[in-house]
Image 1 (tube, rainbow, N blue to C red):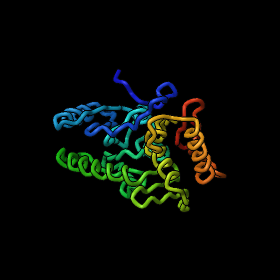
Image 2 (cartoon, rainbow, N blue to C red; image 1 turned 60 degrees about the horizontal axis):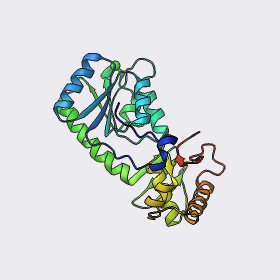
Image 3 (cartoon, rainbow, N blue to C red; image 1 turned 45 degrees about the vertical axis):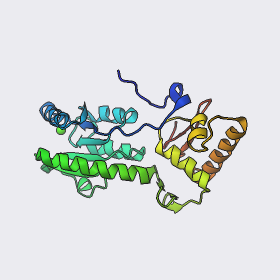
Image 4 (tube, rainbow, N blue to C red; image 1 turned 90 degrees about the horizontal axis):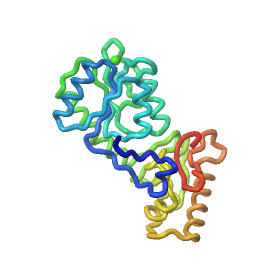
Length: 249
Ligand code: CA
């Protein structure tokens, strides 16, 4: 078992941002032959490939593992590809997704990409075309991940330092912005006070004073982001730190 950083309370004391592994792909495909062909072809191109054969499997894999791009078949047993995709996007997953689909199951939501897909390919497709799309979305994905983040209805644009919730602009101080950006970039992971001291306040050591400053900033963010909102984003993980995610921690 490779070590994974899941943001569990045990691992939360020294949580570092998990980089997106370049060239690591998740292929979600239930047809064995197709999955095998994709794996062999992509590994031949130097990609590191993980295959999941069910939507459920993909969902749980993506909750704990990061990938540069996801290749998602739409017709899956159990929960289908679109259902999985929209659930993951609601949870703030920003990994680029390329949908693979047969023409007769091509959904309008995919064509319009409003299901949260970044691109789609109709089966059968040329392998060279798949490689070209992968490179394109990986490039775009990295840019958008760095510059624009979204969890639930919270949107953050790093370039313009603009923050909105439900489309309404939220005014933040520079430090509040840095803190929120850090938490959002590491959404669904426990972020410890140590990490915040180091990464946001640029302090090498924690102190009681700094802990108080962090707590004050967290409660101001809560007032601005979460107050009266049905979906709370900023959660306290008792004894460890904080976690930004939609819903219960
Ligand atoms: Ca299928």
